[in-house]
Image (cartoon, rainbow, N blue to C red; front, side, top):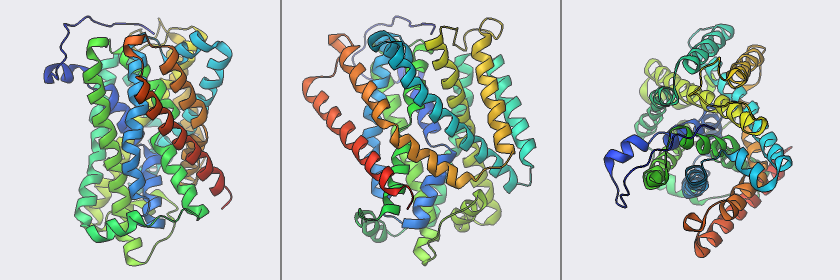
Length: 417
C-alpha cells in the first residue's frame, strides 16, 4: 500500500474544513454496507416480521461504529492494510486465513450486488446480459482512468441515491404506537426470526468493510492529525446506513405486515411493489430503481477493490489506484476478472433473494475470525498513545463477544428452519 500521509498542524478541536477534506472512506464504506443484499434483507425482515427487527437496526449503530473506528485507528496509525498487519503480527498463515474469509465474503457480496443491478434492469425491461455488460465495462473504465479520490467521489455520488428510501419510509406514515409495539415484541424462541436476525447482523458488519476502510484511509493519505475527522466520517456513515436499513424495513412493514399480508418476498420486483404503494407505481419504481442501483454500484466498487487490494497485501504485488494499469497489472487484473466472472454468474441466473439473505448469514458466521483479529490487532499493533484504554477495551471486548455469540447462535439456529 502506498502511503501518502500528509503532515498537518495539530488541531484538537473539530474543524469543518479538515472534515471536508478527510471525509469519504467512512461514508463510502457505510453506503456500500447498505448494499443490495442488505436492502433485500431489511425488506424481507419487514415483510415477514413487521417492526419486530427494527430495534436491532438501531442497536447495531454503535456496534458498527466501534468496529470501524478501530479499523480507522489501525490504518491511520500503522499505515498498513489489514492483511499486512495480520501477517506482521501473527504470521502469513493467519493472514491467509483472514484473507480467505474476506474472499468468501467478497464473492458472495459481488454476486448479490450484480444480481441487484440485474433485478433493477429486469424491472425496467433491460435484459440481464446487457445490464451486466454495461456495469462491468463502466466500472472497469472508472477504475482504469481514475485516482482514488475520483473513485471515491463517484462512489459517494452514486451511493447518495440510497437516501430515496428515507423518502419512501416517510411517505408510509408509520404509526409511532405500532413502531414501538413491534420493536419491543421480540420472539427470541422462533428459529426463523433468529435466522433473519443473524442476516441483519451479517448485513451490517461485513468482513470486507474492515479491509476496505483500513486501506482507504491510507490510500487517501490520512495521518494521525486526521483521526478526529475520520471518526466523525465513520460515525455519520454508521448512522446513515442504519437509518436506510430501518427505512426499508419500515416501508415494507407498513405495506405488507400492517395489512395482514406478511409473506416472504421472492424477487426484486416483489420488493419494489412492497415499498412503493405510497408514492405511486411509476414514481415508486423509479425511486426504488435509483436506490437499489446506488446501493449495488457503490458496493460493487468497494467489494472488488477490497479483494484486489487485500490479495496484493499478502501476495506482494502493487495494489493501489495511484498506480496506472501498466504499473500494477495484477491489481487491475484481479479487479476486472472479479467483475467479469461475477457478471457471467449472475447472467446465468441465480435466486437473488435467497442468496442475498444467505450471504448475510454467512457474514455473521465469519464474525469470530474478523472481529477476533480486529480486537487482537487493536491491543498488539497500536503504540501506547493510540491503544484502547483499559475500560474501553473491556467494553469493546464485551460488545464484540455478545455480537459474535448472538450471530453464531442465531445463524446456526435458523439454518434449515
